Amino acid sequence: MTRMPSWIRRHLAALRALLVLTVVTGIVYPLAATGVAQALFDDKANGSLIEKDGRTAGSALVGQSFTDPGGDPIRRYFQSRPSAAGDGTP
Image (cartoon, rainbow, N blue to C red; front, top):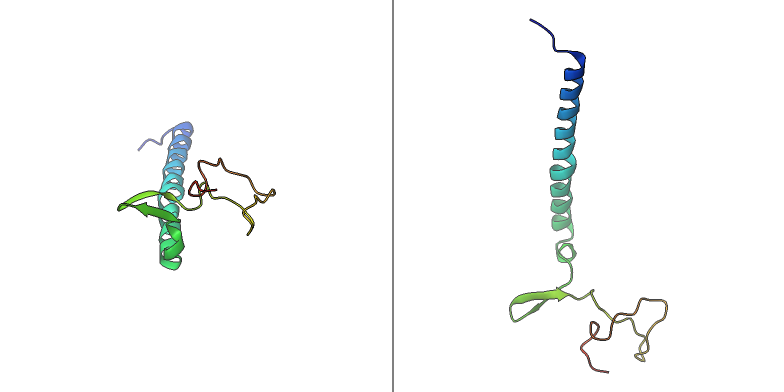
């Protein structure tokens, strides 16, 4: 039985490592992290989705307005466009 040249063995080893690491880091780990998040933090794992007329309309955290109790913007936070924040009432 003839042995393969060393360059072919190295390429096959590299290909096996690529496939194993792709499966582990691209499939197994994301599924495990998602499973743990769903099991331990089910109420928070899916985000802050808003439903309107039975359909998902967006997230409560996108376009939120950062205001103090008086309604004035808090300058240390990024200020969203007025059309994207709140319900449009002054």
